[in-house]
Structure formats: structure tokens, C-alpha cells
Image (cartoon, rainbow, N blue to C red; front, side, top):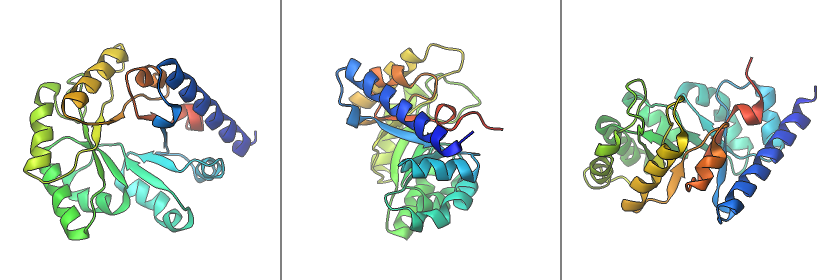
Length: 224
């Protein structure tokens, strides 16, 4: 097995599918970004993905991302990192320092911690608010009914810019209704970025307006 060629072929295939889904929805394929979910991937697969031209990556944990990307930051021009996993308030400063975007903002305490870190560091990552569209107790994010008020509070009380929304639909439900709900919340709040859709449902997400799709296993292959 040639990991480099397999990874390059997988990435090309996913990009083709993204483009086809965008065109089918009457959208510009360039309006949909591919976020390669690199959590827990071995170095050889990361290097192969970089060699294939991928520059946008998503990570779940701050410490794991620090170990993987701190040195590569300086060596890879154009590298962009997004935190797509839940973030503890006490890690907010580290996250704001490492990541170009934090996509999982969903609590007032975290908003306060990010605002404090941004003020001290003189920069603020792009921020997406995570909406728990399925209202699942084990998942992070703000409930749909509370999303408008939370977006308003993040903007006005904490002085943070909000670029868009993110969701992870329940595994056992049709994702389309969750994508439609997220798009509706975004539209009424003037938000343009929608991070939704993963390996198994990103084409559906594009149909509902996704501007970023988070793909892991379909790009890297199964872990382990």
C-alpha cells in the first residue's frame, strides 16, 4: 500500500464530490471548504495529506493539536487549523494562540475566557457557535431555542465577532432537518459560515448551504 498515493487519490475524490454536490445545488464549488479532520492520525498520513496540497485541518483536542502542529506551523505556509471539538475554558488561551478558528463556542463561560485571551494576545480566532440541534445531553453546544440570544450575547456582552455556526446531527436521525435548522438560525442572524457535514453526509450538508465540511475517515482511511 502506498499511503501517499492513496491519500492523494482520496482527497481528489472528495474534492470532486464536493464540487459535484455544489454544482447540483446551484452553488460555486469554491464556496465550500474541505476541513481534513486530522485527530488521532499518524504522522505519515498527516505528511501525505500535506504533500497532496491540503492546508485546512480540524482537530478535537488542544494538547493533541499542539503536539502535532506547533513545529509544522512554521514549516507549512498557508496552514490553517480549526478546533472542532469541545473546549474547556481553562484551555481557551492555548486554543486562541494555536488555532485560526474555534468552531465549538457554546457556553457563556467559554465566551468570557476567549474574550479575555483575545484581549491579552491581541488577536481573536474566527469563531463559530456550536448549536446542539438534536439537544443531546452528551453533546456540547447551545440549544436551538437559545441560539439567537447566545449569538447576541457573544457579540454585545463579550465583544466577540461571530462568523457562523457549527452542528453535529444525532447519528440516528436524518441529517437534512438538522442542516436546514442550522441554516435557518444562521440566516436570521446574518451569519454566512456553516460548518456541517462529515464523511457520510457532507453532500447533503452542501445542499443546505454548508461552507465547510469536516471529513476524516473518507480522507485518511479508518484509524487503527
